[in-house]
Length: 125
Image (cartoon, rainbow, N blue to C red; front, side, top):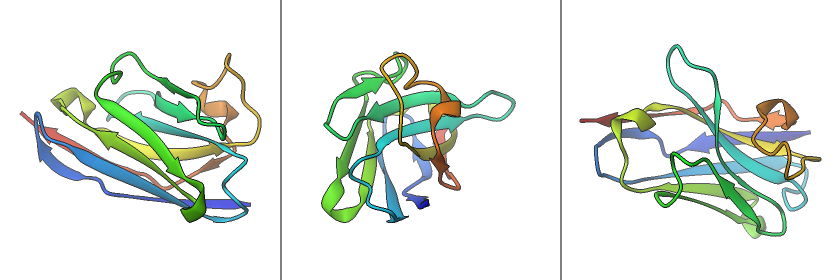
């Protein structure tokens, strides 16, 4: 069992930056793929970014070039650095961990085994 806790959300003006953190407890984080998803009001949860244990990453087209996912296995933590934020980035952001995903389904939230409670990010125009 892995428990995930996100932090770092908040209110920021358009063009600003935030860094989200996800700290894992329970099992060692090292062998899990980590994903960040977000859900805006009235919309489905959508993929944002993913990082495999080996360091490979994928990003949604909407955030590519603005967001950076990283992880520190020594701290059992993952991060999402968000720059040049836009009002459309407003959502609850979730951290997730997966034991078995592939390059075909890394964007599928159903493939992730563990989820955090989410942290709200609000970008004002």
